Length: 130
Length: 124
Image (tube, each protein chain N blue to C red):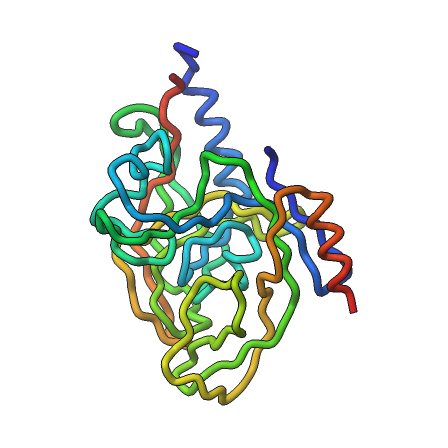
């Protein structure tokens, strides 16, 4: 499927891409016929964690159907070290810094939903309009 | 498909190198252009350049992304992935992968990156 991005006004985007999945790393999962060839034991997963057999790993499913991500512009806090403090969301995959005190804010595109079809994503995206 | 002339791969790689001119370092592997350039970016370099296409090992064709000497670090954190995008008009994420070594970066500094390859294996 062709990659596509749809902008709704200036604050909402819908974009398709590979699904982000988490599973226990096994030889079967790491087979190049199942996951992309750069996911290997000892290499890093999609979150930058070293892949260890028997432990959870996160990967992008480049070989499966694309999904539709919905994004909305939002403010994130920045701590004293300059690290981004993301809002609590099941769609955000990186961990927040231990020091979660924001000293300033900045705008970022933040994941706001995932849908399996373009139509459902557009419907959900329009519901986010202010 | 048993055979495709190298010229076809080179046309693809030339098209890629002509428009994929922004590289971001990211705190996670981005699934989309938006994640690469905003949600998970820790820094970027625009106007990246490439070498001419060459043979790839064990097969196919590749182009080398020229080393980056002064990328702008815009966030603080552990950079684990790179992403190459088309930054203008119909924006798009074209390629992404893990960095050869994760690197802690600090906002306001600059980053460097050694040359690396982007390639296409032979058709099977």
